[in-house]
Length: 81
Image (cartoon, rainbow, N blue to C red):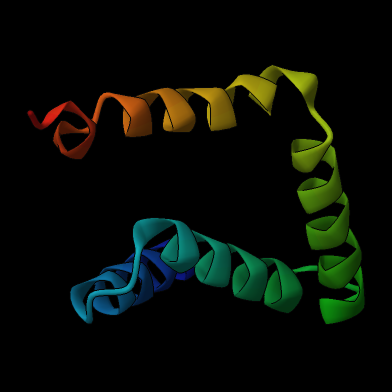
């Protein structure tokens, strides 16, 4: 239980300095996994590499760049007259 409280406190501290929430969660999760797992950071490196590859090759996220592109097309700078 104390590990969870420390992780939440560190996460709030890092986020309080203005770091994006995604990077905050990544840093706290990676560090916590590396410290708590019996094989340490070697296994944490493998897991983070697998997760990045799995998420980047997931076809369900293929529409995300299209939504960003569509949002860019509807930006007010393109509708000036």
